[in-house]
Length: 244
Image (tube, rainbow, N blue to C red):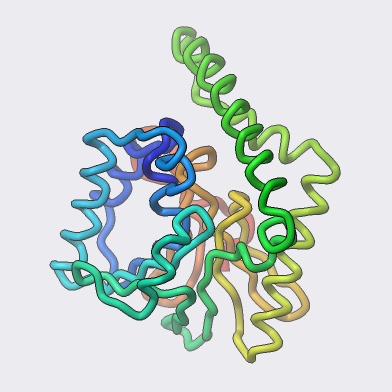
């Protein structure tokens, strides 16, 4: 979600939260962007309303689990604690309606930059912020011409060979850990690349983000999983690729 940044699409996220109810709700890391808030404070009313909506869901019976990420690692000290009815965890497990056991975690543990060279990750974060700043100007111009928003970051990730190789290594590392620990699949975030696919007999799911792709992973009453994308304030569309 990256609440606490100007690039968080809190408007679309709030619409999505108001549109759907669920038995379980997993917040898969980087919900509050502590890195950005430490650098320069930014928080608006829509960000408050997102948190209020999540708390209201928890009070209404939804089992909400906050799985911590690298941008909100300050909450890892509270793993195992209930905050406002929300369970804070470093990782969680979820059983789908059709009986599959899924490991749920943010995924930064699979990122060599996070583990071994945090300065490189911070440099990448600055480059990403610059990319988003440029993208904001482009999308302002697109709106003036009645065009839908477009993500420069997603475009670059999809065109750069090294970025594609990095995402693939991440996906394989996440699937390998789930397989080694006896899970049927893994649900994660971190790389901002929504996907559902099978890797070495393990189901790999990434819920994307609410900065560029505005996506969420959803399960229906039969246990079928799909990526939902919200490009503007309307009913989300399910991405056909990878739904299972």
